[in-house]
Image (tube, rainbow, N blue to C red):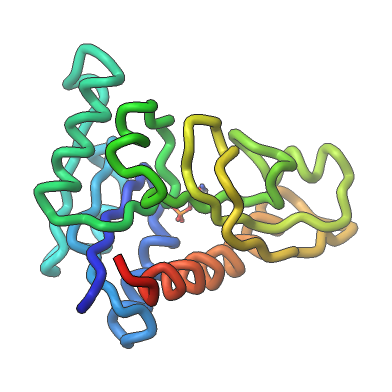
Amino acid sequence: MKRKIGVLVSGRGSNLQAMIDACAVGELNAKITVVISDKPDAPALRRVEGTSTAAVVVERKSYQTAEEFDSAVASVLEEHGVEIVVLAGFMRVLGPGFIHRFRDRVINIHPSLLPSFPGLNAQRQALLHGVKITGCSVHLVNETLDGGPILAQTAVPVLPDDTEESLSARILKEEHKLLVKVLQEMCACAP
Ligand code: GRF
């Protein structure tokens, strides 16, 4: 049985694309049933246009409170039978209510070797600190920002002439592989 994945995005969607591609060639025994964006113009949404994956926009401004927004997102995921939730460049922090509804079933991809450089601009933080090795992490999402249990990591070298762009691109390539690898493992486990 294919596991049902829901993906939350806010932007470009290259990690979403890596998952779409892995499902298409059977590397991932899963179906992405829904992609939810908090930004109506997120390029990620276009990646599932014309496919059987639903693309849904849930904007924060449509709800009075963060809890109501979280609950709306959770309801859309549940309507689509989602078993595993992937935060792939989703720029909002989900509250305890959401985490509780999907406990241990929400993962996030982050462009650093956590616990170093949580939060925004992880690649810039790595350059500013002068680290020689950084990378990417996939972790379970809990109530702490980028702080849940780490599931897998890949190390990436920082080169002497790196810019934020060149370093981000080198990390991103590894993110795509790492995310698919973790999902393969999760999909192989019994629900
Ligand atoms: C990635 O670097 C991811 O680690 C971070 O946001 C970026 C999303 O990129 N959380 P994309 O939208 O998947 O291309």
